[in-house]
Length: 118
Image (cartoon, rainbow, N blue to C red; front, side, top):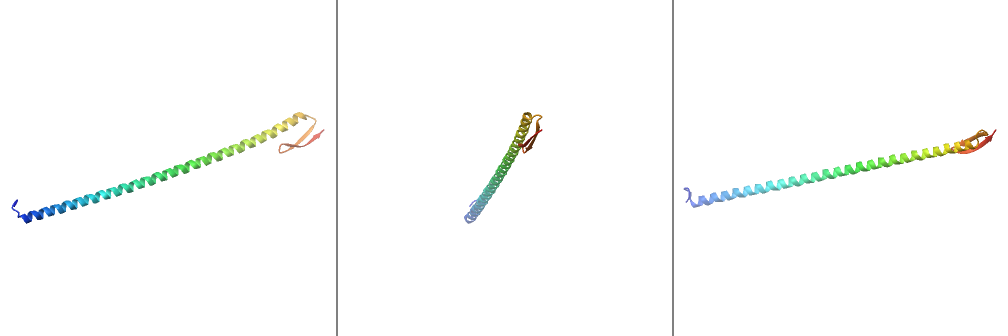
């Protein structure tokens, strides 16, 4: 006998203490499992967000590359047109020098169509 309790009462107290300890352990385990699940969910959400950000960045890069290609193609087209115009003007000036005052030279798209002498 301890503290004025019988052996049976002591055993009952010990059993109750063990039950309470088991309950506390189970609650702790459940809390830990819930925390782990929450952490896993947060990690999954972060991964999804990172993937979405990467996809957005890739799309932006692709759009920029397409714009650059379009700008380059437009610039090439303008350069080609300028070169063609320079050739037409050069041809016209060369022919005018060859026939300075002797007649008129008619052009169509930079090509001599006729020369009329005076």
